[in-house]
Image 1 (tube, helix red, strand yellow):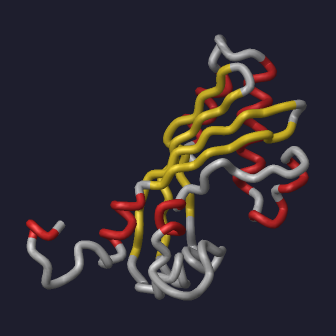
Image 2: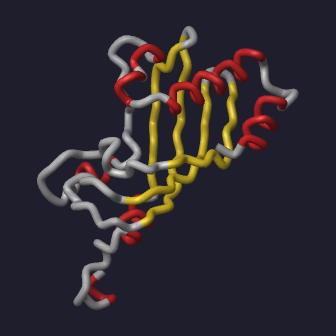
Length: 156
């Protein structure tokens, strides 16, 4: 994580104490493995959109969706984070190696670096809503699966 960005965000004099707490909650939530996040969410929480939702929709084969093995060395660098009222928004860069199945895409061993954005709504100190979006076009290009070899530019 880019600590100066977080330190600056948390020192912003226009933030309320609640907004600072919301940023800290989101950062704690993001640092946890998926299986451990429920304690920080309202009952029945499900993100409105997962970051790689388009890949899930066009799943290219059999196998799991996104798991910890998909990009096991994944590191996220937070580029920006802001809060206003009960909302927190962040942009981060995902870096790692595609070493496990990813929405049916077999491991390529390729390094990836893609942007993701997220939005959270906080209620009573818990995450009530979330929405994520990954630059999936950049991801599939880095994985070498699009454009397909042998096609012409007009076919895209």
